[in-house]
Amino acid sequence: MAKEQKQYIESLEEMVYKNRNKAYGSYQIRRKYRKYLSIALTIGFFLLAGVVAYPFVNALLAKTVEKKAEVTVIEADVASIADAPPPPPPPPPPPPAKVVQFVPKASKDSTTVISIEIIQQIDEPVVNTAPPPPPVVEEVVVVAPPPEPEEEKVFIIVEENPTFREDDPQGLKYLNENINYPVVAQENGIQGRVTVQFVINSDGSIVDAVVLRGIDPSLDKEALRVVSSMPKWNPGKQLNRPVRVRFTLPVQFKLMN
Image (cartoon, rainbow, N blue to C red; front, top):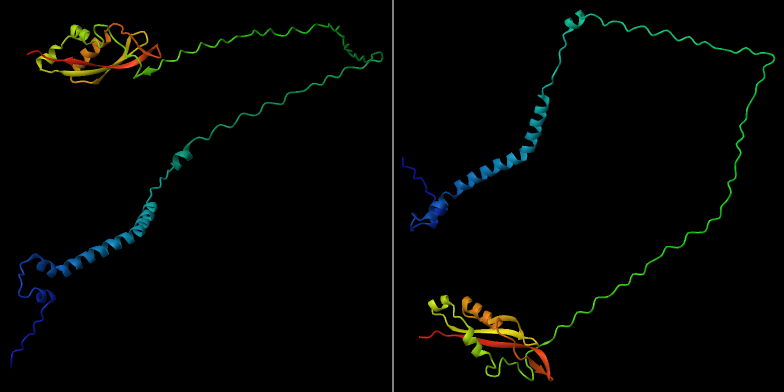
């Protein structure tokens, strides 16, 4: 009897990966795909069933807990209550008070006198009084404060520029004689030009000094100090009248070799 030869049917994975490297990871994944899919579907089914059944189970457990609620019963000792003496009877009510009616005896000569009080209204004399004088209203005079003087306009360009002195129009000589070179800047070898801007009032005084361009905090501070300490300038003029002028002055710091 001839041996029956079992016909071998190749799977889809065998057909795809025939004559290929089956040790590659994708071959193993495709082989176990159905297994993993079945496990995932089973877990998902149980999770879905649990979610659907949760409200019913929760309601059933709540009813069970309500039925099992403890009921406290107070048992009275009937024997002790029966043996207890009865309470004393209430006291009898007091006897009603006797009411004695007194009726005066009427005599033949007695008469009833009814007195009627008459209240007479006494008219008081009317005294004519003069009305009170009207209140005196004091006049309050409000004096308005004097208007604040308008701040003079600051010019940048004028017909006649301000000057410091005849021999030192820009004040550079005064700066060289009165400036103190900071020791910190000398030790660090810092030098250069600090540009200071200020306003020369119509009386020649200096206000609002600021550093436009600085090089070092110590040098900037010294430049502001020496400029603010300058005596009064000859003010600038516009239409032959002293006016406020914004002025820019460079302060040079240079180390001597």
